[in-house]
Image (cartoon, rainbow, N blue to C red; front, side):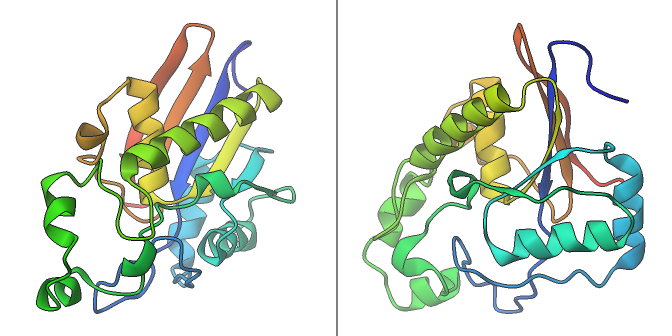
Length: 205
């Protein structure tokens, strides 16, 4: 079923899980994900709209997730690549684990934990800054794809940032949202502003 007149529906999906037994910080690193759970993707296809606009961040884990949805039967167009929907840039901390940083007595770590939303990792960006770029990208894409269903395969931080701008939340508050791999968050852009339909839904459970 198409969106009602004047409504643009955003179906925000976090990419499939990235195998990482050591809990490394991936951020904007281009790492692969695990798309081996065929039954999970079949259930997701049943929950997604027909003929959506497809948007990806440009990282391979989003492309792999879209490919698994196509293999499960979802007809998708070529993606619109929007780098401003990438995960938060953790700079020089990317590829390391939080435990590694603690053991190494990383000098900027204390400031980060005191204000994890407002402090940028060395060489990276703060979550507050990420909200600004995600907000701009979503506003532009909503205008360009008005009245459509938009399937955006993105990242946990991206979805938290989208919720922050839709709900007018402080950045630190938005960090409290749980966003599981392959979860769905539905935000509707209406003439009266954003409407939140669902957050972190797992239709395959």
